[in-house]
Structure formats: C-alpha cells, structure tokens
Image (cartoon, rainbow, N blue to C red):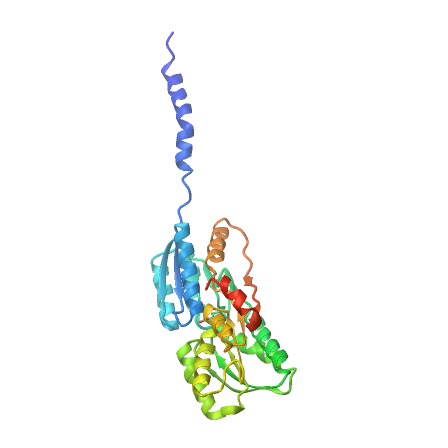
Length: 318
Ligand code: GYE
C-alpha cells in the first residue's frame, strides 16, 4: 500500500520543522557602539578608556572610539558621525555639562540611545539620555573637605586646583568641598584656579599660587590626583614639604596617588571609580531587553589616607 503523496510531504515538513526553527533562533546581532571620549588628560581617564575598550572586545561588541582631545566641538562632531553611521548605541563621556541639547536631540530623532558615563550634562529634556553612570562628585568634594577639617583641626589656608572649567566633576567637587568647610570659619580657600585635570597644568598653577601666596599656603585641595602630583612637584621645588608642611588632598585614587602617599607627599585621596566598562555594557544589554534603567547609576567611593596606602596599593587596578 503506497502512502499518498500529500501525506508524505506533510511528514517531511513535520520532520524538518525543528531545523528551520533552530535556524530562525540565531542569537541576536551584537550592537555596534560609538564611544566619544574626552581625551587622555589623566591616569583616571586612561583607565576608563581601557575599561570600556576591554569590555567591548570581551563581549564581541564592535566599538567605534573617538578621542576628542579635550575639545567639545570634536565630541559633537564624533556624535554626528556616529549618528550618520547608524550605530546602535552611543556612550558619551561629556567634557562639560552644557551645550548638548541639539546633538543629543539629533541622536534621539535617529533612534539611537545615549548613555552618559562618568560626567553628567545639563539638558532641557532628560529623555535625551538613558542614564548616567558616575560617582557623586558633590559627595567626593564633601568627603575631602571633612577629612581636611579633621586633619587640620579646622584651620587651613587652602589653595584649590579646579578641574576643567564647566565640567561636572569640577563644579560639583568645588561645591561639596565648600559645603564641608563652611562650618569651619578658620578654613579658607585663599586661591582657586583651573588646572584642567592635568599634571602639567596643575604644576604650573601651583607655581603661580606659590609665587603669590608663598608660605601662607597650608593645604592644597586638587580636584584630581594628576593635578595634585603636579602641585607636589611644585611644592618640592619650592622647598615647601608636601605632605608635611603643606597638607595635600585630592580625588581619583589612581596608583600614582598611592605611591605619593607611601612616599609621604600626598596625605589623602578620595576614590572615584573609572572602571565603568562592565556596567556600561550591562546597561546596554538591559536596555536592549526593554528593562527599565534608573536615570543615575551611582558608583560608591571611599577615602584613603597615608595610613592605608601601603596595604591598599597592592590591590589597585588603575
Ligand atoms: O576625576 C579626572 C578626569 O570625569 C570623573 O575626569 C572624571 C574626572 C576624573 O580627568 O581625573
């Protein structure tokens, strides 16, 4: 008895069905991500760049990297180029807080979600970015100020080395520190200027502070370690004993800061985590799955002083 042709075809189709289904269940395509970075002004930033690049390659994500060399105009250009290339996501480490409405609006119109890493922006419409993955810089500044108040018994003539003008960490670290010392009438900031988050500029500005204020200076507050290390060099050259005659505190907790603490030249540093790659790509994955993402993914920081430096330096990753 022969099987009718129609039945035979149905049986074959039934047997091949799982195969076809398996083929249609290809893993979803990996996203293409554009990353617009500020530059390479500090050890912190180099560590952040490495973290994002490493994590992308670990996950097989294609990363288009653009270094703006400290220029907002170059960052805007790179965002426009990412939009033109139709990337799936943009990661932006914005150099300053303002001036992003238009280009982020263009990214939104093109349907490209933007994640901010390490620094925030001030925009009219918060829906222009998915989230900000960063530390709380006001809190970091406050921690530095409170530590200095304790260390000096509430008496200090401070010079402040600010970060890049208009950058979120420069604005907020200044604010937090000022809040902390406000309770201490004998703590005063006698000079404050931007050292652009770089060691060379930190040294240059510190030399000018030393020239105008000389031995009146009893403490240095630097918005990052690189500037503090530059200031330490300037103090050394002026014979002003950083770490002893002059108390030096900064933010980031990069390896160079720990070395300077072990040497006794830097007194303390507040940690700021630059290893944001894993969190950034986890967030992209969640976003692709349609999960709700909080608007601020806060990194928690702590302070290290000389008493912890020798032990902690062994574990530092950056
Ligand atoms: O503290 C500094 C850098 O945006 C948090 O930028 C970052 C800051 C960091 O150049 O070293």
